[in-house]
Length: 210
Image 1: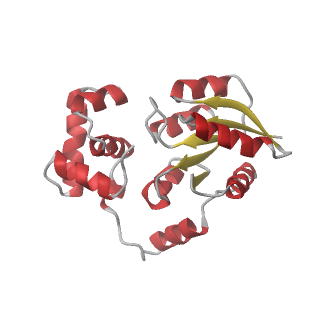
Image 2: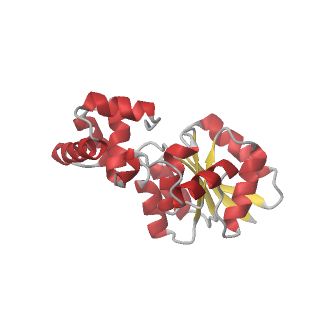
């Protein structure tokens, strides 16, 4: 039996995912979570094979949460789910240890296929993403500037794109405002931009907002 935890802050989404998983004879939902705290509780209270992890969980910025989960549960398979296009976050998620990446526009059958594949030890990506990753490996895909950002810089850029102030970002990430400002400066340098307004525009253009 494949034991699944569903982590998504939208009740309707959790209900839909639960219904899809529950009708499979070889799968069982053993926990649900609406935020990072709830996810840790779910993982502590059950034996889990797969987590269906929403990329934008409240109170648990991605990819920090993904990294922390795998640090404590190395054998756990994590299937990241998101409204964001694959070309925005999939490569970073896989690099951080996710077993697969699935956009929420995919079909229920795609979801079931993905769960079974990652449990068998494989990595799930769509055919389009597989092609994209292959192109990146052999140099055919143009480099995207924000791929040079560290994970923390990437998080800060996303919050800047959402219009958050330095103070709000600091509170969200558990950092000091001075540290957030330092990250902002580094991001400006790496992206060759000059202002927060340009950073916001860049994040919106590349669909990087939370």
